[in-house]
Image (cartoon, rainbow, N blue to C red; front, side, top):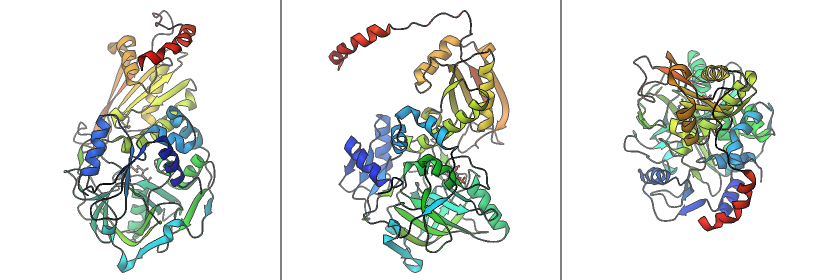
Length: 456
Ligand SMILES: Cc1cc2nc3c(=O)[nH]c(=O)nc-3n(C[C@H](O)[C@H](O)[C@H](O)COP(=O)(O)O)c2cc1C
């Protein structure tokens, strides 16, 4: 089996005991996401497979992307290092693809009049949602000018047997490719893949210039050519081992109300570009697993966003500050608004340089906190301790007003023009003359390992 297929990873996750099955019937409305949110409050993140979803024969899997460890396993590294590894690999583009004949998703097909999205277990997540939503779909399309392909997550509202509402509100590549196509009065051919390897989900968030393909960046994460296969009704190649492939087009000059939808910032989002995706064909594998990515303020939505952001900020900072040690964009900030940076400071003022560099990479970052290298940025208690004991707000905090923000339905604190202020915090200690931190004796630490068992 290819190592670009997510199925072998499930075998490993099963051995780890983190894949749990629910065999009793669950309702299509709210039950799955409510359970996942409850578990999340208890800091439990199992991969859940619902074998028996009301009115459907296809099982639903969720929380596949719920932890850093799962992305790490997918790349073959240890938990916390995943952003570091992403940062390294994303630069190693491989711009050719390997075409796979007879891909497994061609095992079952519905084409033209047979197309029926209601045969898929597309569920309704939260009471605020406008209806059932496809949440794990990665939408693939080509730039009408350069022919480069893009791939990214987009929420899609189930509106009919062959009709999905889609929002391109991030205004990234798909939005621009569609704009270019609509300008010519043409629909944009597109394909949606569901159920793919975590490297593909993570690479979909990479920042890539319009004229370059995203597959080249994703291949960098695998360290080999991306394996793709042809669609049957549109001129698009898709990752070859997707569980489901939905083919069709985004219609030019058609808009229809879409949303609201419970978004990852924990608010109902009414913002939408209100586009329509008309489906021409649906293909799926034997014994398919339908991925429902838990939306809302969930680790599954936020972790993928956070790792990409940490990796891109790391790469940008290290161009001028090679002494940056680690970057964390915590779940508490939706993986997007706050950024903790640790560094081995060698000159006073470098922390503020890091603050400005981070703001320049990503306009979403509202708060950048810089700490010394002895602080673990993945441990928020340590970051807050550094702020408590190494920060004086009159000297170490900078506020930048009227910056581009995320928009009031995702970040309700922004102003009427969607502007936000930004705060930079230097929570590093001075290079000279600061109180020494309490340290443990490493020899004694080693010696007392024998006593830990008494505390279990
Ligand atoms: C789970 C998830 C859901 C997302 N939903 C949307 C969405 O509905 N609309 C949107 O414009 N961006 C959404 N995004 C952000 C885009 O996926 C991201 O900006 C991506 O890079 C866009 O791909 P593109 O460059 O091909 O446009 C989502 C991201 C994640 C992780």
